[in-house]
Length: 238
Ligand code: ZN
Image (tube, rainbow, N blue to C red):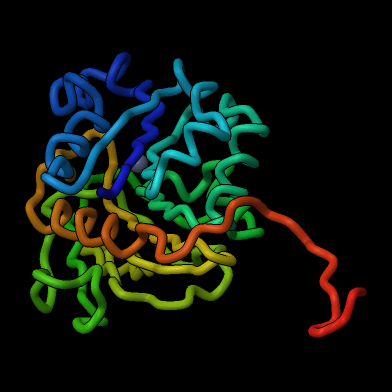
């Protein structure tokens, strides 16, 4: 069983007419619906319940998916630190779209994670540049999203362990749209599409990628806690 938790701040879906029309029950409920499977359970948190992301809740989470934008600063630092520590023990983390500026993602990256952006509904062609990767299975050579928020390089992240998707926009920009990272025992996937005023999470390819990413990011090994133990020399008392 893979225990997934989704954090979606769920602010635009309450105050932006376009977002309300596309995601009347919140982005998280659409993601939860397509993720549900015989071997996957899903629970959801929003900014209103962000304090419920406790150490205990994270221990019961195999993969945490994060969508945030205007509410990043309202997420308590302690929650972000808990999420980072859970990733270091082995929990998977998937950052979607504007989660590039979320507190947990920035803690895990150690950089500012700035990027160029433009919101004019350009088309994005997303190239699968690693067809042998578990997350790209079922995705062709490329697919297109008719309207996205353009994200442009330079993207201020440390060099990813793998770049598996490259985004090209009709404005000519390029972006590392799908990147993987490892931090101690944990696996991280960042995926660029997901702007709240476009129906991106209903796209079949996007759903396939997030489903694949959940299975890829699920812990292979999880340590009990982050400790720095004193060890005895093998065969001796001290
Ligand atoms: Zn956006």
